[in-house]
Amino acid sequence: MEFKTGAAKLLAEGGVFENGVYRRTMEDGRQVNQDGFEAVWEACAGKPVSYEAPRYGEPVIIKPEGFRWVADPNRPGLDIKRLGTFNEYCTSLAQWRLSSNTVLPGEKLAAPEFRFVLRGDVKYGGKQLPERSAICIPDGIETELFESRTGAEILVVDVPMYVASVWKHARERGAMQP
Image (cartoon, one colour):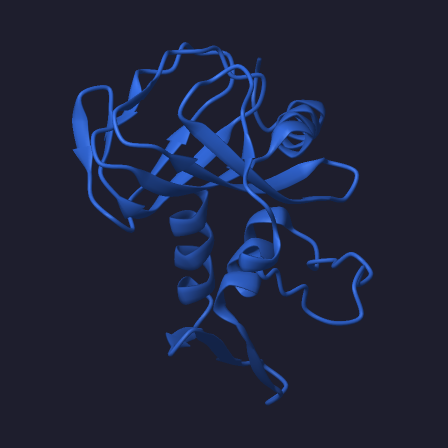
């Protein structure tokens, strides 16, 4: 909703959006060409976007084939490749391999989790998930059964501390009420 309001404000000021770029001619004749998303963000926030200092000198390229599968001792039929944990928010990436006829019971997640079906047969809560599909499971809720009849590989992204930090910051700004 905020995004639409910000875009409408910029359009009302005489700007246009073309191919992801916000363009506007100012009263003094100066041309503004700015990334469209950035322009809308600034219109909503009322201040320029600020970016954190770069943390890595180059892109991080993860080669999953270089990691070993490790059996999960608490969930039979599940092997895991832990690909990495990043920054102070403890965002992590892992690959799961489910053996044939594996059923993972419901559990309460401590952190939001994204699961991307890379290959294979997967059902979540009784619904078939096709390859290249994704689900987001919020923290604090009981998950549904996660199962595979013929085996599957899943990419799992955990975002434990980032989400809590974002909500806390939003509440402190008064952008939302608890």
